[in-house]
Amino acid sequence: MKVTKISKERLGAYVAFPRTQCKGLTEPLDVRQDEFKIVEVNDVPGMGTAKLIEAVDTPRRVYQLFLPDNEAQFDDYLSKLLGMHESPTYIDGDTSFIIIFQGNHDSVEINQLNYKEVVAAIRKDRERAAWWWYLYGKK
Image 1: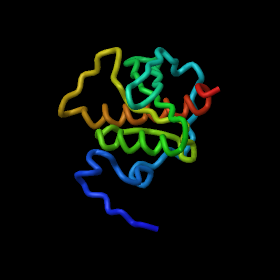
Image 2 (image 1 turned 45 degrees about the vertical axis):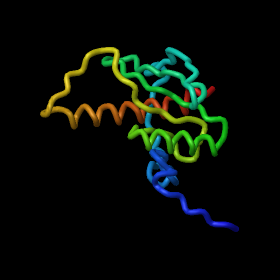
Image 3 (image 1 turned 45 degrees about the horizontal axis):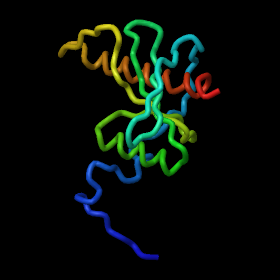
């Protein structure tokens, strides 16, 4: 077996061994089927088909859902997203999808006093969107 050293220049923004740096969700959340909906499907160059999932409740956060064809492509997508400083979410043991936050339909005020709460709310809602897709959207 030939071992090849990968330089940082060759690797670029690509993150090696992405699942060691970004663990999947393991604690199931109780999510209602009517909490989210699929609003759009797009073809993203270099990333394949992506769907947009929107929360029904205000501020109607939107998440992009990537659907890799296989486990190798899942790791490739996860590496690229981590290299772009995104915060991808997926369910541990399921390499069929990755979710990232895209934005809100409704305005949310973010300032130095509340930014931690806003980030925590986005993270919590993103985890709920991942469980929603896992439970209801994939079917």
